[in-house]
Length: 150
Ligand SMILES: [Zn+2]
Image (cartoon, rainbow, N blue to C red):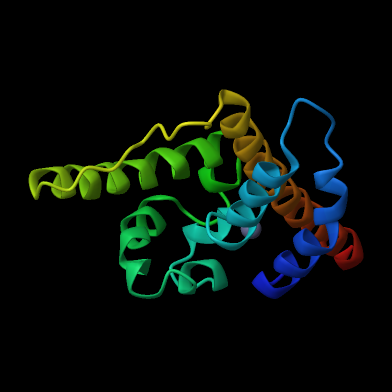
C-alpha cells in the first residue's frame, strides 16, 4: 500500500483536476473539503500512527478508539461508508465541545449568514473526491503488487 506521503502527493497533485467540477459546486468550498479530506480525514485514520493521525497532534487521542475498532483497510476504506462513519464520529466530538461551550455561556452560530446548502455540498463533494482517490490508489497499488508477485 502507498505511504501517507505518497497519498498526500497524489491527492495534492490531482487537486487542480478536482476543482474543475462544474456548477453549481463552489470551487473554494470544494477545495477546502478536498484538503480536509486529504490532510485530516483520510481513510488511514484507521491506523493510530498514520501520517494523517499524527497531524491531529494532541487531538489524535480522539481517533484512537476509531483506529482500534476500525481494522485497517476495512470499513474506513469503503467509499462513502468510511467517510460517513468518520464524519459522524468527528461530529459527535464537535457536538460535545459545542454543548460544553453552550453550558459555559459561549454561543456559536452554526448557520452563518451566506452559508448555502451548495457550499455544504461542495465541501462534502471535495471530501468525497479526496476519499475516493485515496481508496483507488490503495486498490491500484495492492493489485499491482499482487500481479508482480505472481
Ligand atoms: Zn489507505
